[in-house]
Image (cartoon, rainbow, N blue to C red; front, side, top):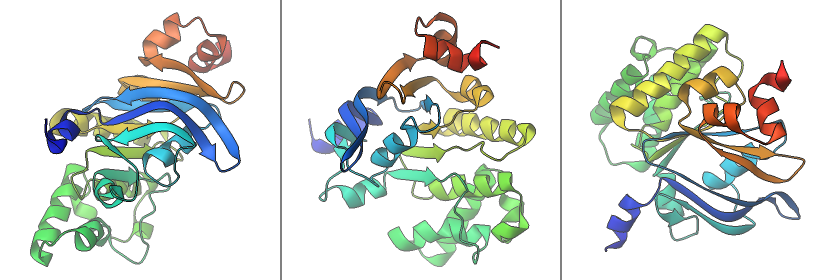
Length: 253
């Protein structure tokens, strides 16, 4: 089998016995799971448990301390780094849009940096992406002129600009009211169902977890590792781990 064919058949993300953390400080030990293509996969746990650290490894910001991590069949290393950065898209918690640019210009930026498309083609591609996320009418607005939920939609459009194999969402519901959060959940499901997109989501919002996550991995700071893996409702109703039950049932209330 060719390298390209093997990468195409590989899971979207695969971790094997990964130690996650930073030089001199291990946060999580022996983490293993895979994310299937076309899946919405959530990283869960309490504050400081390491879920954001795991995502930083997945998107290439920090190297794993031990074990193997592959995205689209490739390990993060100097020889694959540029390819991998074109294989993933990231929506940061605040949206991280450039304030001096319009929404359209923000979405066009990755196309300017990483493709040879002409300006007209870049504009058409960016407009189509904004339309996909319900933001076409706000294309010429600056981030300061739109709501928090709209900024996150524009950030998702930018994350999709290079047609990535995996899109990472960091706390997409943070700071949003319940109705806006629910609408963002609907958008994630629409993109998964209509475009076959793969999402890895860091979140602690239970309504979003139950609505959008096909599967999830849960981490516990006290035990320094992964304590659950599976479908959210199955874990909520059938886990024999007290921490997992308390998390999904809001402390038993």
